[in-house]
Amino acid sequence: MITQRSSIASQLPGRIFVPGRSASLSSQIVTDVRDALFGKKLKPGDFLGTENDLADRYGVSRIVARDALRTLEALGIVEIRMGKGGGARIARGNPRLFAEALAVQLDLTGVCVAEIMDAQRAIECLAAELAAENATDDDIARLRQLVEDADASLDDAERFTALGAEFHLAVAEASHNRVLVVQLISLQHVSWPRRNPTLNAKVAQRVNDVHRELLGLIEIRDAAGARKLMDDHVKMIRARRVSEHAARSFRGAPKARARNPEQRSESAAPGFRARRSAPSRNDDGEGFDCC
Image (spheres, rainbow, N blue to C red):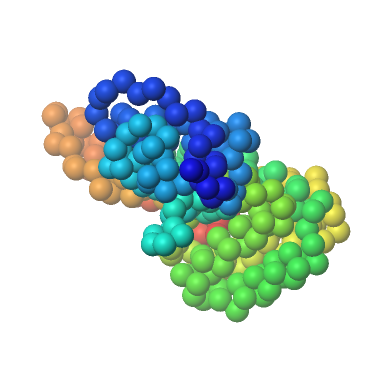
């Protein structure tokens, strides 16, 4: 007799499996559960069942059912409780888990800095626009506090960099669009440095002035102005990140041996190394605006 608790498991298709590897069998269970979730046949909190429930429904071993549940748990689809009264329930959802997983995949894929920053620009511009439309008093108070904290951290590059990331995320959260927030968290995992090596107090002050201006536009509900300022801001961040990455890559590249006197003469020309390895900026960071 199937209890009420296991009724969800009994509603799954229960395909007739072709004998094969257990991994293939468990993946079919995973696919069924995922399809039922997207088809709105399952919702957060629904009790999916125990290993025995799934094994009985699909006519597979408990080992196969256990493997399917572990995969579903790793994907963030189910939460599993052990012991009496335990089993698998459809998870409530954890967008940050997705953000971290996406960040790992982006890093493994080897996306370049320019790709990341182009995507970040698109996300942050829309987030700033929506923040000006949707920000609550609490959102604005948080943004104001971050600006004040950054003002007190102009000489602490690591702290200021962290506050910059937090400010940008707070703008996205003020948009009240969870999809934008998750995407930005993912990109920040990949792109935002723990400590910006070319940041100094003068650049930090200029950055925080931009953040303060952006906060002002959000407060007065100037959506178009907030979007435009964020666009200019992120374009400058992109320029600096790409330049810094190119400089690091050049410094880390093996030195090529010149094949003829002309090549040796070119590489030995005064200022050649500086032109190729240094970011396009002055010593005090002028010309760039970056968190």
